Image (cartoon, rainbow, N blue to C red; front, side):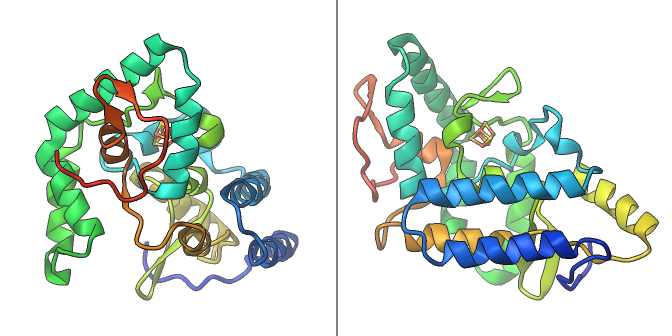
Length: 247
Ligand code: SF4
């Protein structure tokens, strides 16, 4: 999708007002659960208006390949507490999956973390994405079970926003979704006769989530958080917001 100004699409003024109100509420928020609540509300509003969005039907495209997201320490902390309540047999399976993922995709994980840390020169980013997409094409998020999210109530912000938000990258605005859905939106906009879409912008949520995290804490993909929170053969009980990443 090419550059696309974020303007209210015709007939979507009510949704635009709801999104603006959501942004204003976000300004006063200091805890992640409240961010998630607002996100879920806004995503439901978007899905109700854009009935072309197919990812409301069971779909795990954004849990596979390169898609599982970079997440913050606060997001991981919620997940960690949640999975620590699982029966031991499920925790053992999570640990097995984390170790398998790291063994299978060690080089790609190291490269992803270098990208996250800003260690890849700008001119190499596109090529690095292509390398990662190829290396991770058969990967799935360790929390995906039979094409469903095993940690759905505490899934990270990025997972909540996928498919129902726009994302601004430099001067370009795109639908924040998988390649399959982007072509679906191209058809939608073609029929609509305009490229205007009324959706929340992911970057706003990302900024809010970053603000409520401890300064200098790690941002990493889920398998890195998992592998750095295994102690012996058990999940750690408490968050280490800046673990050393040695995989
Ligand atoms: S956390 Fe859940 S929704 Fe997010 S990528 Fe993993 S399985 Fe998918």
